[in-house]
Image (cartoon, rainbow, N blue to C red; front, side):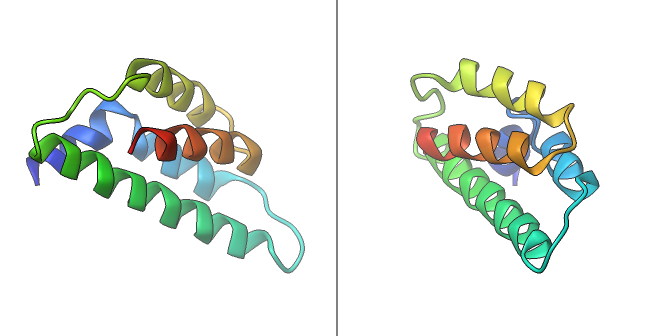
Length: 92
């Protein structure tokens, strides 16, 4: 649980999830896109926490990814959340 929480804190995941949930969506795929992004964020958090538990907490580019996620979390748009989710996925 500590590794899970640390990944959430370090990578601003609560704020990113809030941005995803606040984003306006339209069309038949809008809610599906949001759900897919939230699942991608959870999967990345799982992999980041597992890396921490395995003694590999500092992936190359982690600080840059954290800054990008922090910036994207301020923009409640699925495009910003998508870019952030991809940055997280590249780490783990």
